[in-house]
Length: 98
Image 1 (cartoon, rainbow, N blue to C red):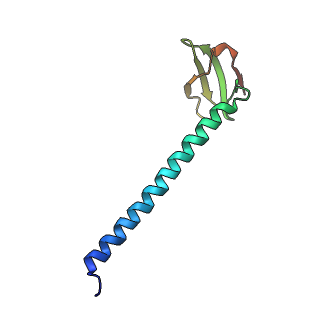
Image 2 (cartoon, rainbow, N blue to C red):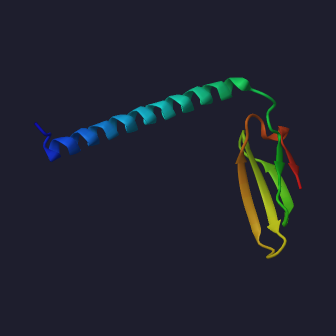
Image 3 (cartoon, rainbow, N blue to C red):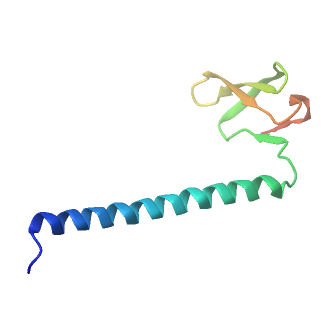
């Protein structure tokens, strides 16, 4: 006896949903595993902030605790740009490189 069209459609939709959920769970589990492994890898901390071409550093200030405040001037327009970076540890340990 042939299967009704609605039942066949429902069976395909349930199968597609199941496959989508399995792939989603695998992606989330992989992201968690890679994130945990990445944290343990450690390595040297980046203590250098590079300023892109076309900007001139006007001033560097250490904000509250772990904040580094850069005041830049864009060479093309003369516009002042303020960038605030959150640092890992004391902001005094960071260097600004042009």
